[in-house]
Image 1 (cartoon, rainbow, N blue to C red):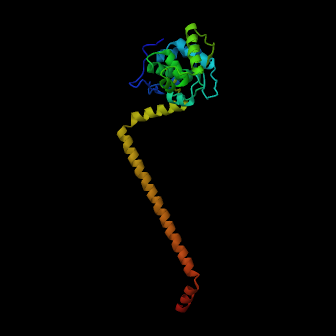
Image 2: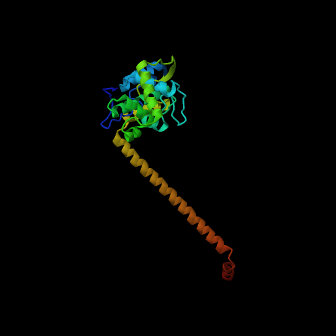
Image 3: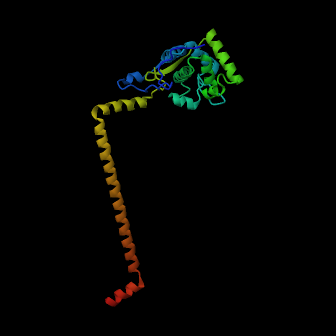
Length: 255
């Protein structure tokens, strides 16, 4: 079985991570709302042009839709993303249902693109890694992986009922893999203001001036430290001279 028309990929077949924030969004866009689990699957399917039933089938097989699921190997969340894979996909919190589903859907879309829409090979890569698919020239001879491909395909063909649950979704994270925090929104807002006030040339001038000031300050501190050290050496020499018997005898003879 194949899926055609996977979109949003570059020349290497890898999809770019969406930007976290948009410059012209106001703070109201970062307020949290809720979305049903089914709605999140629908949005993920539309965003990455992957069959919704396929995503739900993977989630059913991977975690039975449990957001807090963690495997013995360390895979996390509904779509069971490994931490390293999650980071590559731009997922900052694998236990966040929205981010996790978006990340997992993004990943399966990449596998579908890689294998020309072949769902069986994409599922095998999702379970065992694309390196093993390449190594064995198809679905690896692992019982777990072979059963996984059969199970997910069966779920997809028969249809999967999604639990009636809703989860918090940040307005800034809707349509993006990585959810934005309030701190990130604030930083983006002030960055936008600065970009309106200062040009890149102004920024370079500021950096140059700041560097010179820092160097001047460091040089001044170095001179002060050297001066104090010289004064300390002179004082020690005076003390040594003052309490020297020879020096005292000479001074007494002069007087």
